[in-house]
Image (cartoon, rainbow, N blue to C red; front, side, top):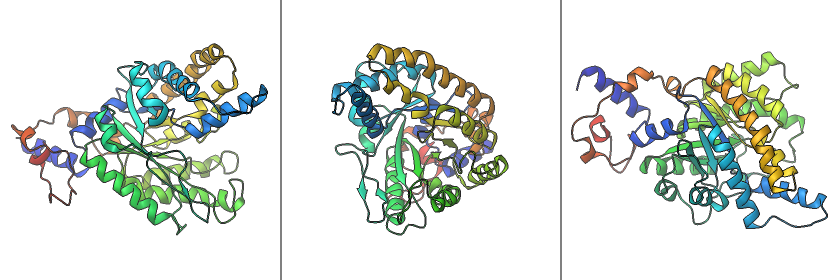
Length: 369
């Protein structure tokens, strides 16, 4: 093996970019290495939106399992072709999307690991819990490209921060063991009597988003971040500074979540984030929430085919033109990756794992490549 190739292999390993993770990054990305991803895993939000729709028509009920499944299948079938990766849940989404062939063959598949909600602490924190009956191993087994984990995280909230960190670390090690990408989403939260409109929470949020990225972004392969500020509250100059600081704190490629804001606001956030180093988006409700305002299923699908598709395409164009490719965030070039060659017989030694796998000790380039 030429020395230059050996150095490139060592660089990949030092970044945790084993074969399964590289393939996952390729699958969820656009051809130029940017990421246009759509999230459809928000079960509680969808249930509540359905309940509001039913209430307007004089019904006090929750959606049935079948109604939720049809919504998930609609989103996969109509928005899946427009994005580089689609995030789905386990309970309603992934089995039905795969069984119905609703997910396009060329769209990356990300699957949520955690269940909706979680254990509440007295301070108001939510501790992440895994969906019952679900696991990293099962996500890998069904052929997904990435695991997604959501963790509510406030660095200075002692009841939850340490527990959440340990949960993130545990899941990251499991993803290393199974050689599958981890997309980590962290979300700040009000506590100690605050709500999301409290001045103390809004003042703290930008710093929380940045510090959380500094603390945990190394425990994933793609980091899904909140917008570090509030449009209209801070100046554009301050928001840009916050975004640059977020990018400096992130140890991995990062994408922006939508947090349920309206589409025009998300579009502004995305443009600012992309100009400050983001690799793309992993947005949900901003793209499709009005789907749940239509009572007729065909009207809902028509709205998806027109307005929702238009939104995803608009963001997709922006991501491809302004986004930072994932390999650039890792300090790599497309040419470096294209020229890497594995040692003969590498497959005998390949066991997934990672350089930090304590059970096996240090891993050399020859162990994986």
